[in-house]
Length: 415
Ligand SMILES: *Cc1c(COP(=O)(O)O)cnc(C)c1O
Ligand SMILES: [Zn+2]
Image (cartoon, rainbow, N blue to C red):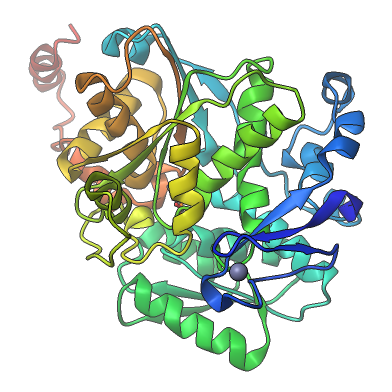
């Protein structure tokens, strides 16, 4: 179905390249010339109707294949990605005094994060292009999801991660049988080495910013949110931001649904970062160009000192008339505990950063309590048990003695 692709537009110089062939970056702007895939929306309008969705029994992100620019040849062989639950909140919304709150639990994807949406597309594209090896560098989740889907499809994977990657993610990568390169440095260093290796060995490049199709996978989260809400998405959608591909995808999904006449308005997007690594927030606050910054936060998935998709991310928030906000690590940890306690949903630090951002935005009046909100929980808490321990108090050992138990339960207020 790649016949709906019209071509690619450079996010830097704006030039349009009319072709159905796969492209990576703009030939004029080089590596920074990240491309946006454009479709023939008039032709798609005739195909992607509400009836199309009503009759579609494929409950995965592949239900959107015509709008993703992928061939459908191998879809049935893939693991099921997407169509994650959109949970209506009763307890957390009450706690926050919010009229309407939904939680998109993307930690329930096969490898436990939103990155599966992009990795699934990458692996399919790699197979389509006849690649022998797929490679990527990542803070951990793109890495583990790439390893996951490559394993399932029998494609060798080489994965570069910074040494700080949490134990759950590292374990996943090796368990899925990928060749793991733990780079003695930060994510910036891992990215550089992967880039050199990909150029040298000619591997398929899954790096999130460079490959324009990664956003095509990521945007399906918005397509799902809209569809799960009967094509009436919430006033706001809140998402944490590292490289900027996810937020770029979130915007593109809603923008295209609007273009196809399926939704009336694009939700405002709140982009949330950690104060320890907030290049986007700083740039928007100071109305200045993006500057490299330290990667100093426990929210490892969004500890990205040089965002690789700056323009898509900045435009996503701006065009949606949304806002940027950053939160300290302490509030991220509090949000993790709150989400667990109030909703039974366990998100990793970068994932619950969205909730911490929502709370701050409510306090600052950026979002008002009578607006409706969706937060995206982008990754599963089990990936990073060490940081999660900061959100709880560790249990003490109990003597197997009913009187001691009695005292403990009274202390806890259970009896
Ligand atoms: C990657 C990731 C993000 C942010 O996505 P970017 O595309 O890097 O902005 C947020 N949360 C989690 C859990 C992630 O893995
Ligand atoms: Zn260009």
